[in-house]
Image (cartoon, rainbow, N blue to C red; front, side):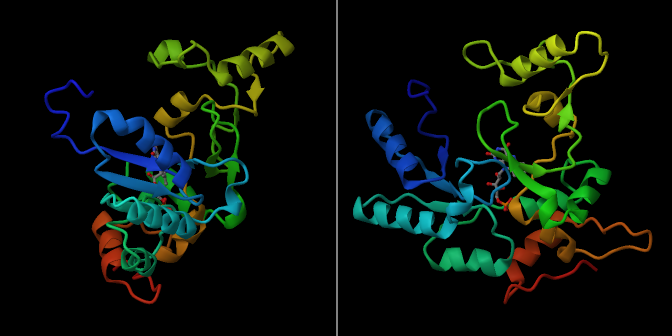
Length: 258
Ligand SMILES: Cc1cc2nc3c(=O)[nH]c(=O)nc-3n(C[C@H](O)[C@H](O)[C@H](O)COP(=O)(O)O)c2cc1C
């Protein structure tokens, strides 16, 4: 990338989940003479893949953000810091901004907005989810723990790996944990038409088809951000409504839609 004529035009940010990861990146990055333009600090309550082990619950976003602020101050590095993961209300966001964050990155609140690409019936699953319906599991073939709804149709699905049909990439060595899990189950049940694979998921195919319902930890609070309609479903929100709620809500209150 360094040789590209526009290398210095584009903004480059990185996502880290620890001070150590940031330090490693900066050390490796020294020879390009170009610092990241911003750093997203993603904590253990974020959606989808986590930059932590299965011991994610022992970590806390605010502590990591403070460590990173301190380090950048000590090193006299002026890089905007953007916390992410579990920032659910305007008050949450303000508290980070007051502590020196340049912005916040949020996602979960927007999963139930009209503009989100998730199908409407899937959005209802996000609204309905309780705390116990959300899990961090090891089914991603990337090897990173992943947070998702337990009732995702991807769980236990034994579909044929989609790499060839969809032209997806395998890892650098041409392998994928799902293919290995799938082949193991096929070999163990040679006479069965349909097999189930529980330990790994065909992430590429299921993400593409909206069948792997990754979500943030606070998905179980989404029901409190909307109202129930006469048919028992939750009202889908506009992105503008969610955005304004972040901007103008105070005291951790959430404004319900009109
Ligand atoms: C449904 C969903 C899918 C996500 N997918 C990705 C992704 O593909 N890559 C990524 O870097 N982060 C992904 N994230 C993480 C967000 O970028 C973000 O940092 C984090 O979820 C913010 O926390 P919040 O969801 O509690 O607001 C995803 C989050 C959600 C909710």
